[in-house]
Length: 367
Image (tube, rainbow, N blue to C red):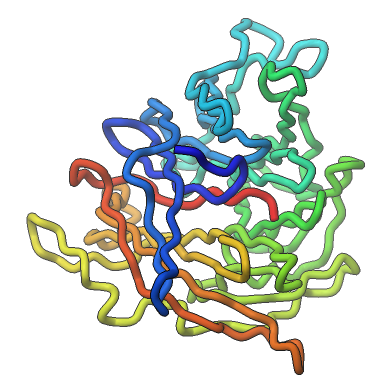
C-alpha cells in the first residue's frame, strides 16, 4: 500500500504488540463523511513503554521516555521501527551534537511518579521546516528538557540539539504543566499552569530565544494547529473540548476565540454504541481527544472511549474503542465568517484482537 509521506496518522498502543501506526481512509461518498483506518498498520514499534511520536520529513519518529531508545520508521522507504542512536557510555551527545543516548532524568513528586503514562509523556511538535521540537509537558524542579530533532541529509538518523529552557522560575519541589501548545511557522507557543501561577511563552526556534507573551493562557487544550486555508488556529476548547477557531498574533495580545462549534461534541446516542463484552457498560469518551487536519477544510476529532470511570487512585484507563468525527469548515465569502459546512457521521475503531489500548490518538504533521 502506498501512502503520502506527511499526512495525519493514527497511533494505537497495543498492550501486546506495542505501538501500531495506521494510515487513514476518508469516505465522502455520502453526505455524512466518515473516517476509518486501513486494516494493517504501516509501522509497528515493539516497545511496550509509552512513546511520543511525530511525523515529519516522510518519517515517523518516536521517543521513549525513561529509557535510552529512540525509534524511527521511514514511511517512504518503509524501513525502520528500530532504535538507531549509537550506544556509548558518555557523553550524551558527541562533538557534532548527535544524540548518542536517550535518557531523560527519571522524576517523581511526592508519591506520584511522573512520566510513566501517556498523560505525562513529552510533546513532539513538527514545524514547517521539517524540525521536530521535543518538550517535556511536566516541568519539575529544573528537571526537564526541550530540544530540536532534525533529519540528517545523508539518511544517518536525526540530529538532536538542546534548547534553552523557558524562563519559568521553579522553586524546590515546584511543578508546572504545559496545558496547550502550537507551532506558527517556526515559532512554538506553550501555556504553563500550576497551583499559583500561569502564563504563555513562545520560542523562536531559529534564534533559540524565549519570550513571555503574557499571564493569559491559550484558549484551547492540548495541541492546536494553524490551518492556512481557513486563516485560523484550530483547537479544542479548555474543559469542554469542543472544536474552536481562534486568532493568535505575535504582538503579545491575548488570542481571540472567533468560533466554537457545540455540535462537535458527541450526541447522546453516539456515546453508547460500543459496549464491553464482559459487563455491557456503555463506552463513553474519556481523556484528551486529538485532532487531524485532512485538507480542504476537513477536520477529524478522535476521542478515546472506555467503560472505565477516571480515578486518580485506580488503575490507568484503557480504551476499548475510539470514535472519529469529521467536520468540514469553510469561510463565507460575503462576511469572512467561519462556519461548519458539514458534520459527518460518527465512526469507530476497536483495538486489534478485541484487546484494550492504553492510548489512541493522531499524530499531525506541520500545517
